Length: 217
Ligand SMILES: [Mg+2]
Ligand SMILES: [Zn+2]
Image (tube, rainbow, N blue to C red; front, side, top):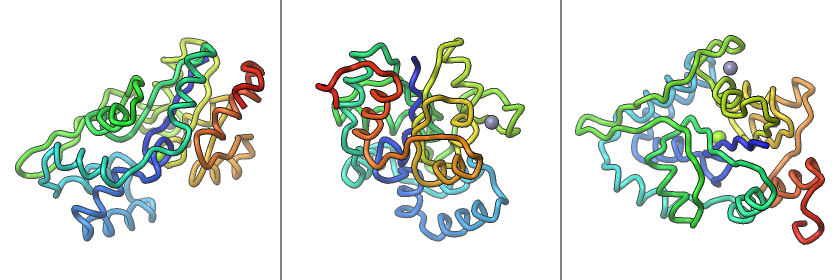
């Protein structure tokens, strides 16, 4: 089984893009966040606009994230559980591989990361978007087609929390959700396991797949 895992707000206690934008460019963050809430911007447009004015270096942002953002409890245990039970975890993010990979490495976790890339220029951060097919369901270059392609016909689960997860999570099983994603799945009448930390996800996988034994509980 493939397990597609969102990064921001799912593996971490803060959405790092929001967190960085609110810290380094608070006025822009508030304005763009309000426009996104009104439905005027896509997720990707929101990311581009919020990060555009930030001239801090890549090393500065990595240091800021490492100092102020924590992994949700149970990250290491979840990755170990997957390794021991034939589950292939992959991070599928609407954030940046060059911030995510150093964060995971700093916390002793090695996972494949499929995400965009932030380019740091003297004029601000530019986003180099990962090639994602235009989704024929939501009309955006969302995570759904990418996760379906990765799964190659295998079953796949999804763990997420936010706007970039809604479309892909609809076609996953099992689903693990919190925050905006949990509200969306509830509205759609799609079953999911709520989670607060990643121990909840590991226990949910155990319950869903029926493998592992009590030592994993
Ligand atoms: Mg998220
Ligand atoms: Zn979609």
